[in-house]
Length: 179
Length: 179
Image (cartoon, rainbow over all chains, first blue to last red; front, side, top):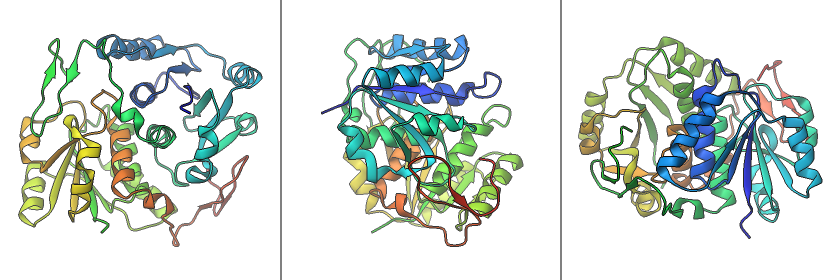
C-alpha cells in the first residue's frame, strides 16, 4: 500500500525560515507527498511553492495559516496517523514498516523549537539519525524510505518544463528556465 | 567497499545561504561524510558546524576559503572521483552502484547557480529526482543510498551528548542542551 501523505510545517518564523520552509515544501512535493500545511502566515512562501507547481506540474497543494493543534487533532479524529520527525524519536528503520501500513499519514516537521505537546499527540516520533542535521534532510530520507524509492519515478505529464537526464550539462524542454 | 566521502559546497553567499549551508554541513556529518569543504569565506558557518562536532562527537572536519576549481582538479589528479548533484544529471539509481565502487568520492553540492565548468569536470552528474527541491535533501538521499543505510547506525563514543531513542519526549544524556 502507498499511503497518502501530507506534511505539516511547524515553527516557521517568516523573518528567518523562508528558504528552509520553501525547501521543506519542495521536498514534500518532489518526494511524493500530496500537500503541505504551513502553521504560519507567510504568503510569500506559499506563493513560491505554488509557482514551482505551476511550472513543474502535478497536483501538489499548499495551504498557509493552519492551526497546528487543530490540524493534529482533526487528522487523528478522521482516522489518520501522525508522524513527528525528531532526533529524539525511535529509529527510522524500526518504525517505517508500521507507518507504511497507515493511511493517510501526516508528517510533522518542526523548526528549532517544537511544543512538547506534539510529542504526545504524534502516533510515532521518528528519528532520522539521532544527530542534529536538517528537517529538510529528515523529511527527504523519511519519504524515500516510506515510498521505497518509487517517488524517484514520479512523472508530471502536465509540466511546462521537462528535464532530460544528461551526462554533462543542462537539457530541459519547455520555457527558458533560470534554475 | 565504503568510500571515504568529502562534500564540496559551491555558490555559498554569506548574506543569504548561512542556514542552508550549515544544514549541508550537518547533513554531510550525520550521513557519514568525513569532511566539508566550503568554497567561500564564511567563518561563522565553519564555526557553527565545528561547534556541533565538539558537542556531538566524531572527527568530521570543515574547511572554508576553498578554491573550487583547484579542489576539483587536485581531487581528480589524486585518483578521486567527483560527483556533482544536479537535477539535470543521470538518475541516482542508474549510477549509484558505480559510484560506490569509487574511493575517495567528492560530492559537489551547488546553490542556485553552478558554473558550467563543474558539469564538465565531474565524473558523474547525478540527479536525485529531476525536480527542483533542495541540495540538502539531495545530499542526504544520495549519501543514504551510497552507504545503504549504514550511516544511520554511526555512533559517536566521544560525544558530550547522547540521545536515547524514545517513543515520547526528549531524552538525552550529557550537558543541558537547547536544541
